Structure formats: C-alpha cells, structure tokens
Image (cartoon, rainbow, N blue to C red):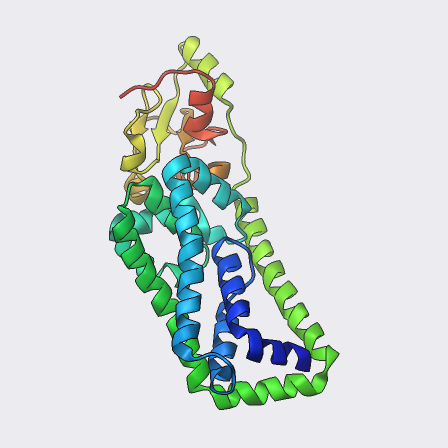
Amino acid sequence: MNYLLAFIEQYGLVAVFVNVLVEQLGAPLPAYPTLIITGALSARSDYSIPTLLITAVCAALLADIAWYMAGRRYGRRVMATLCRISLSPDSCVSQTESIYLRWGASSLLIAKFVPGFASIGSALAGTLGTGLTKFLVFDGLGALLWSGSAIWLGWLFRTTVDDLLQVLGSLGEWALLIIAMVLVGFIAHRWWQRHQFMKSLRMARISVSELHELRLAGAVPTIVDVRPSHARTEGHIPGAMTVPMQGISELALDIPPGTEVIVYCDCPNEASAARVAKLLMQKGYSRVRPLHGGIDAWVAAGHMLEL
C-alpha cells in the first residue's frame, strides 16, 4: 500500500489522466475517488492543484471528443452499442435523449455527475449535430465542475483523507485487497442493476417477418411508434400512430381491449417499446408485443417507411 501512495504522490498526474480517460471512455473504473485523493495529497506532491485540474479536464475532453466524433460519424449505431455494453440501466439511449432534448448542450454541465450519461451524452451531441465549439464549451465546463468538485473536496478534507490513507497504509497488502473488493463490489452492484433492468424487459416479441405477414394478410394490428420526434424524420412503419414516451401515460387507444397492439422504438433491446407495452397491459390491453429489433430491423429487412 505504501508503494501505491508513493506512486500517487510522485505520478499523481499520470494516474489521474489514465483513470479519467478510461472512465470517460466507458470503463467502470470511477475516477472521482482518485481525484479526491490526489487533491488531498497535492500539498505534499510534485504537482499543483491547477495542474491536476487541467490534467483531469484534458483527459475528460479527449474521451468525450472521441465519442462526439463517433456519434457524428456513425449516428445512433454508436449510442446503441454504448447502451448494450453499459453497466448502468439508467444510461439507455431514450432516457439520455429526453434529458438532452429538453436541456440541449447545457445538460453536459451535469452529465458527468449522472451515471451512464457522459459517454452517451457526448455521442448524442454528435448525432444530433451540436456544433463542435458549443459542445467543447459546455462539455469543458462540465468537466471542470466535475473534476474541480472532487479536487476541492479532497483539499477541503485533506486531513481526514490523509488519516484514512495512513490507516490503509498500516494494513499493508490487506489494504489493496480491501480496495479490490470494494471495486469488485461496485462493478457487481452495477451489473446486478442492469440484470434486473433487462429482466424487467422480458416479454414476448413479434418479429419483423411476422408483422409483415400480418400486413400482407390484411390483419393489420394497431402499431404504436414511441420514438422521440427527431428520430422520426425519415419516416415510420406504415399505419403507425406516433406517441412519444413523454405522452404515453395519457395514451388511450380507441380500440377493443383484445385488439393486437405492436409497439416499436429504436432502442437497444427494445427497452422503450417494452416499457410502453407493459404500461398498455396495465391499462387493460391484453395483446401487446414489442417489435423485435425495432424500426432498424424493419428497415434492414427491406420494408418501406411512410412519411
């Protein structure tokens, strides 16, 4: 443990840069504690607080620019990938979109304080065409607030942090084991949250081919599109009624309760469609299914869209 503390005191800037960069790229390795510790140790280390702050902000901006450019080039595909690999159930694309669409680029000011928001928020900014200068201004200020708050807390409670580090240092190798167990526990907790979230989405789906066959047979079900308005610019499945997620609680379908209802979105794992399907079931509609693969699967199968 003493070797680790000596490394942080001497190479704190390297530790901060790598930790912040890796976390902002999407790895479940929280950098906030590292910033607090390095902030507390800055008085006796080879680096100053301004240098530490600049290092953290630069690392965060480097990762965020990478996601921004990926979102600009690959669009929603990169966000779908992020949502699939994320350990945070709160990071689903649709939830991040609702925040970003409401507050715009200013939402980046608090993005790093919200689990799962930072990476998807940066990719979403690129996908929605937010200007690079505007993105850099708000994202840079957000990185400054996030890293600055951690460093300030470390400096403010430097005596307490120093006492804690001395206790850990006296434990020797056991301290490293405790830190490793805490990190494993954190990752396991996030994984369990995602597992429960995915479990809540389990229900029968209808495939694109099944829906297409129903349409050919003239047995057209009620189709509900729950994508946000900006995602519907290229069209929707013919005959679909558009209802954004925000208005789904007031939705009342003018159909018999036994009518088949198909709900689709463009989220990974049909997350939004599954949630809406469950809400409709609670309202008494018994035959509700999400469309497997959403509108992306419909387009990939070569079927037409309606403007």
